[in-house]
Length: 163
Length: 289
Image 1: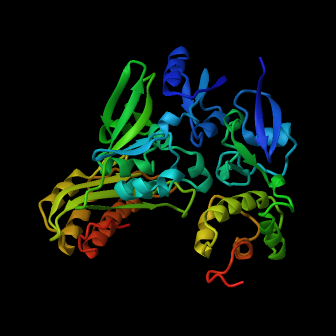
Image 2: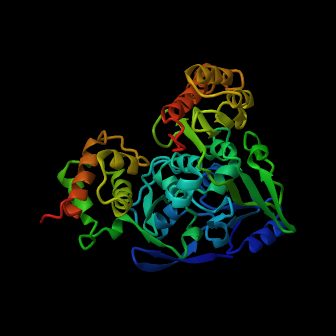
Image 3: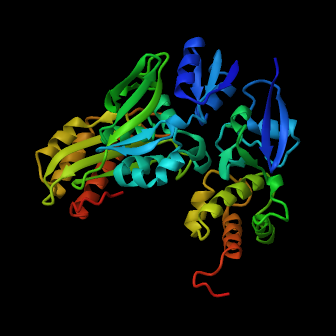
């Protein structure tokens, strides 16, 4: 008996037949929906490469069962198009050299969106804390923090409201 | 294995009865890795992640009631928790990572009952009770008696953790919570401590609870340290003696993360650090951490 669920991903509804009941959201995104921007790093919620937004909050999709995602809004890196207000984060990553192999990047961007949508003026310490669930083996993190700080700046008015 | 989504506590309990050996899943941050490694084999999983009845946070008289289905991220910054259960707020902020905190629940942390579980010392030091639901009613257990060993609790088959009740912080209470790990995030505690004191403005300790994590098979209540504090007025000599007593009350082990000796020293130092912070704050009742 096959289980099907309706998943809302990047504002589109998908009818998904689950290969087995306890399949994770990560596997469904990649295998059933072809949304391979989200990566599997560790598969156990430690590295953050699989980070997506669920109702606007960063979660490890390798720990969310696909059935649990039904009824919630999922946003993946594919949802951050040039039309998205958060595209500035990706642009900043490119501009600041924050991408080497690129494997951690989608997760970093999604975690950064959660951070900036709840703390629009983060300090560098806030940024490090907000990204503390995302590992990078290549960059040493400095340029990633620079990029997120630059994106935050680009997305907010200066504190004194000058233009 | 079936995955069954429920909306109410009642349905959860009915399904637990219908599928003996089934487990509930909320955030899945502890459970999913176990399932994937095939350490657990279950007849069914009952998804309680959207049961609203488990997500209340409210003051009832002088108790703060927190539904077990709340995730750590919410508890770490919720105004009622920050004000009336500050140790728990601090502890929740230390669990895992931002992503883990957005899914993992208080009930899950308590149910897993790791010896190093971050919220456990905070709840026990705060004098909390757990409300457990079963098909024929509800029962209460003091947090101090609920945690019995590594991943061993008093939870009976067919029961779920419904909520915790924490005596709301009074004006003359203060405390501290520290967790030391190998990293600042995604780190299992090498040692953790929660202290909660009822104290006079002159520094006389009316009541003390000092509870440690990761230095025993489950949480350790440093009762001799607390009893010593309760006879005394805080000053540097007293807190040095009090923290020294903790060394004899903990049972740490050597493991891949740290040695027993190091953990014992951490336990002593963290208790000292917390008591010192209270001393320096001149008992203004402003909780320190």
